[in-house]
Image (tube, rainbow, N blue to C red):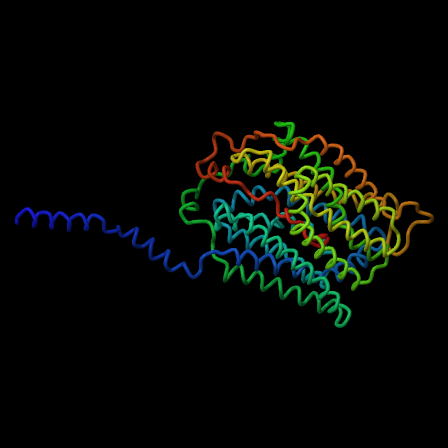
Length: 478
């Protein structure tokens, strides 16, 4: 009998030992309180949709204001504005990403959305300040980078690609619909109403981030990293580019990406302006063109891409996409009729399979532990092209005196920058031929003196790019 009593007392004492500590109980209460307001992919989707919907509305007014503000050198100034914005984004993206790892995603999401949308109301108030602020806003125009980090914080690795695809599809949906709505409002109510509606949408986006979007980075990760200094390696925009020469396969892939994305980035910045001022597309036609290319691009990437990958293989799919891009740019370069632009637009949609195929090729050629580093190199190359491409296209338009509503006397090449882009893509095809289908590349992911938190994050694969699913020609105002 005493033995049973002792055993019972021992069981009770064991149960007392297993009672959670006050800290654990407090942590559980906090967790239960935040179940309703926890971070979700839906939050990221809404933020992206509202931001790019606001800018898509401004497609027609932006082209008008750009022409009125710079009547003599419209293409050159457009290229310089977008080029400065792209280069500043390239320079600031690593630093903002590193700081968000320490201070949390929400504060930097609010910062990037605010400064990206800040120029919108100035379009009608002061066009000069509008374009100046667009250029400077490149320092913070990295919403996609923060959004992808946000999604990575809250999704399991095997579900991450689906979440990235949802974010990219939302980006596509916002730009398929908003230019047409903006063109309708502009035709019936004037540009001032369009700017007002876009400003309201931007304010809603900022308010949504401020009041609704919860923090995605766990408290323990932020608290453990608080006070850690940000190393130059983390903030150096050229850090990833210096890794290019460490492996021949990485070098070939990066040269291919650079030669093919440089003209594509330039095309994004000037193509709608080219359609409006040189080919004489109406606002409604431009909106319809964006919708057509966007819808066909989504079909190409969701249907044709998977079929091509299974039938002809990864590398051949990349080559086929580059071939479509080459044909499209050559057609834009020599075409001078509206129907030629529409026909080339269908080819442009098919060329959108190139970069998803490149990202998949990189993942097949890379060890699992090196995915983040190699994909980061590709993203760095494309970020650099976002700065160089628009400036290059604007300068070539200026050299060939292609301006506004009429072409230069007796031109043989209506769109010289597009022909230059075709030559660049042709070189990319030659380089891509030598990329091996399967090869294990080794690129150093983190320095030995990094913090534990940084080491963990470096080992985690990151999204290849915000444009792995390339839905359509991006609006030059973004």
